[in-house]
Image (tube, rainbow, N blue to C red; front, top):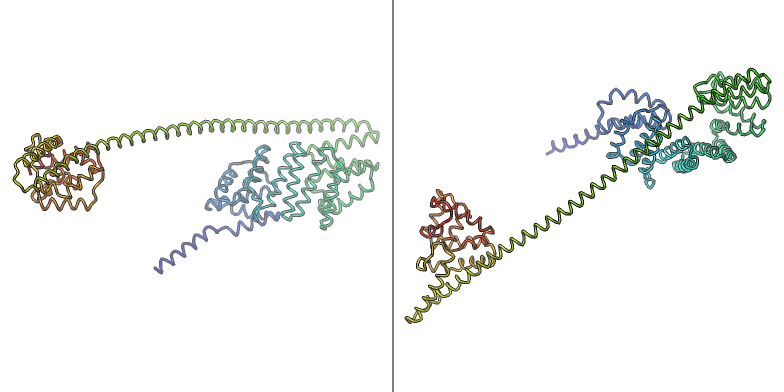
Length: 577
């Protein structure tokens, strides 16, 4: 017993160790992702060699963290097959936060694949999986989901819906106590106001965000969002304010390296520097910064802004050849930009069309499924009603058959009871009155003639050879009463019958129970009852079987005892033993 307990404890420990073998690594990777630490990618690449040996739970966790890391560090994801498996796994095995994150990351895959409709669908599904009533709800993730939805609606040029998404993202960022993310979402919402041509509102939001960053002493973040304000101030002729903000951006935003080169993704700032120097008539400086934009041709907007700025400056410098040259280049860049925008618009519309078509097909399939289920329900209902009707019919048929058996047994029992009563009276007659005796004998003979109808070996009354004392025994009468009222004898009543037969018909009982005949319990009982003049309908009731079954058993007895086929004259043969 002691060894068994030790084995049980060791088994539980091993299971626990197996299930938590990589928990420390997962937690470390998850922490690195949340803190924007690229060490997470290194750890994941290292674990990639062993992932085939992982349990399914660890493999799914690995894939979830890998997708999260790719999304965090802007590594494009172009296949949805793996994330679909992750979503399916966590649908059955994860908690609400895991299901929400897996579905959100699947949406990010579709976002990278350029499938905005399916990305939005996944984001909406992810939101539905969140449980905002739970203390463990991942509000930071919920904020990111709404931010992604806002960005997609911005691409879809739906500023009103975009604003509602930003407001929800801001709400959940505050609930998560993530102030910086809340301010970032607030700043991003200004783009929607620009699209709605509410520039004053957009600038007000940027200024509000700027002051909140400054209150948090995040001067770098505050400086990075000054570009819309710089553009706004140049347009309004507020040159001094624009210069002040340009200097702050250059000195405090941390987007320039030690050589004075701007970080990748911030090149568009040169366009605003060009605008500023063009506004203060420092045309050489304006040309310098517009030309710097041309060094980043991968973004067509850089070329468009650079060529357009140079065209404007050379016009002001009254250099027609250069103005015409850059006018043509600007026109080409503008056409290219328009072409790309048109292509993106066509792609977006095509994606929406494909999505709508798939939705229509899905709805059509759902309608077909509903019709099929309706048909199945109708067929099932009809089957149930039909089965119930058949059951009622067969039940009534059985009851009717049983009633016929009961009526027949009642008639036989009445005759037999009357016969026994008269024989009792006859036995009680002590007098020698011949007239009375003859009368009773006539009545008895009459009853015997009637009883002979029920017995195949008693065509004549004188063949009714009965051991009167035995047939009048209370145990035998009790069995007749049970047959009359459609009741089954108890084991005690069968034992009483065995006692009576062994006492009064010992030779008969010993004969039918001889091993060589191989009669079973039921066959022995039926032999005894046939010997005591019980008719087949009574046997059917006492054994709760059909009359046909009784006939089959009688035939089996006839075969075993007398080597005869069928049940004909079995009663006569039994009583001759």
